[in-house]
Image 1 (cartoon, one colour):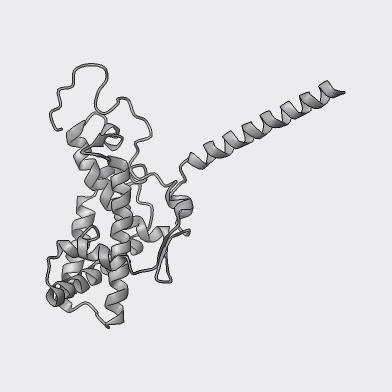
Image 2: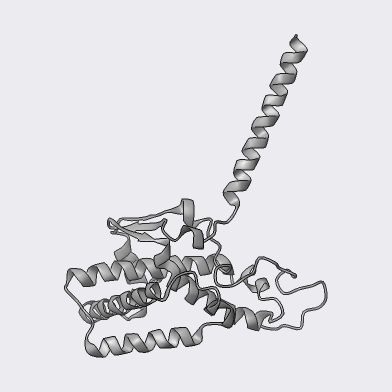
Amino acid sequence: MKKIIKWLIAIALLGAVAISAFVQWNNRQPLSYADNLQENAYTLNGEEVLMSDLAFYIIYEERVVEEDALMYNPENTGDYWNAHIDGQFIRLAAKETVMGMSVHTTFFCQKAKEEGMTLTAEEEEAYRTAVADFYMDLLDEQREKLPVGDEYIFQEMRNIALAEKYQRTLVEKNGGTMASYNWDGFYYKEMLKEQDLKINDKIWEKISIGNITLDHHKVNYVNGSDGTKSKKKWF
């Protein structure tokens, strides 16, 4: 009887370990961005921002990084996305940029609307030009894999135009440069510290930037090397 109890306890422990391992494995698996568009991405000062609202920044940043990746290793751009260069992981840096730019736009749009700001006719024209340039610059692969409709991109680019208008007023009032009020600028970061920002890490941490409008799931090499001497001199 004692042996049976010991066996049952051992089986129960093994089962618990297996379940724990599965849960940890499952928590590390990426989520489909397209399947989570209506999930909360973050909340800023009580305003909920959905994953769909991040689409423009994801599309934009994936293009920018991919252009660098094509220089790093045109045969397999996934090498660059998975690289650690200049003290940072490229994929994580891109993800930080996406979230940072979105929060920046949301925050400055909130401030602009509080002051009753709107776009002038000239600013509307500049916005339309920016939209045309954005679509023109898309990579061919991206055009086939846009995760949202045009209306989401149009709206967010309009928000960016309004946020930049407010940003210019900060420079005029307080001095400094536009860069100091960018999403990674010192003055902006000081302002953001006083805001109520809650990022939905449960969802956001499992979104894989670099694999939404592009496909880097299959990597043939490691950091540009296939075991032979690399001819690339970019870094």
